[in-house]
Image (tube, rainbow, N blue to C red; front, side):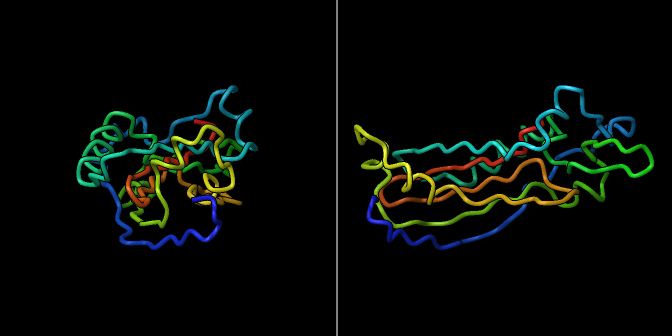
Length: 162
């Protein structure tokens, strides 16, 4: 895994739909003072490694149920020019057809990477996708599932403010 020659191949890009619409009075969720402080920060990215492969159907189902309850995760950070505020827009046009879910494969061995006594940080960084949202509106959540050699990994990049 530490060779630097890892090849990542996108297998599928789909969207996980919101199972039910948020109540109309919550289609625009204002950010708190504490949330706004995190807006200029880079997105939080989490990397999960699994030994037994990827069950993308189960991950998508779990994500669909999670965003049905925590629907702002399916929304977009949006600037309201009328007030100057930044909100989480959960309206039907903003949510669209759901949260992006990217499936990919990568060369290497996830078990070797995760079991190493000293972690190969550059190898881990190559497995975490870039999430650039230089301007608003920007999605709050994207999920990237990737099979890496003998195991699978799931990366969940999300905006830091929420």
